[in-house]
Length: 425
Image (cartoon, rainbow, N blue to C red; front, side, top):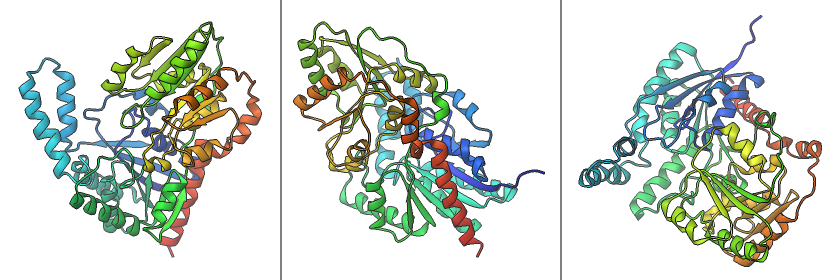
């Protein structure tokens, strides 16, 4: 007898084959929801101007994925620029003004809002075919939630919003003029007061949303997928390698860490020291790497996720970078849970008493320090370099059960069950 599943329509702008770090949250939900009685269908946008794609990620799921077109002028400009590196500068400047500068001003709340009519139409048609039980929208981009709101009004279905980052409180969000700030704040208030349930990734964000909405709010962390670590094994190291996995932009500034490592290297010339950066790096930071000569710096723009896990597992220590901005107190970098699963020493540059600082206080072999204190960072590097404690894999796995993607998907499924139950009363 065929098992009966509830049906959820998940609307998310970023989804594989786009391979940026933020896609893994919804990808793993889609992978495991059937274990908890839910059959997902995904609506996403065709990747335009995406810096990297990885079609192998789609092999992890068996659900329907529907990609629609979108009006995204910034993506058109960036795609054109990548495909025509020898384009005359005056033409690129004109295109930048028309397709990036102006849309950034006039498209509110973000330049992906041009996806709304396409995704709304697709969602309506799919609901006629499949009769969904619930709608789940994931952001950023936060304009995605407008699709959920409109579709829930048309279909009368319960609607859950998932914030994997903050909105107005996002530390990486560009500061706007007072009118734009007011409009976006009102938009944020409208979304969180009109949905049926709010899901978010950190306690500070949960606390923030509770100040502007009386709706139920549940913390569902990012996490790691145990299946990603099935075939990992450590290889012998001939030195000391520190790995950083993720993007470097905004106030994720590694220069204080690099200076501290230079100081450490000058005092420990007998150690072969390497730093591995995996992920995109803004030009200003990349150019400063030449100023540090006491150790080897290797950079990789992108590797498939399975290779990323292998590289991570074969470092000797791992690095996190979270800037000093007060809004960073809510940031829990997505990679931190995979870092923890590796069982390696972690050097964490993050705001004191922020979400990341507090989370890491629950684990061993963690060396936390303020992001700009070179002396404390050097001390953390020194401790990590001598931390050769063997990780008890069984104990490690037991301590991290709460952060496994399958377990976290179960929490989301219970939220969805409760929303459907209330809707049917």
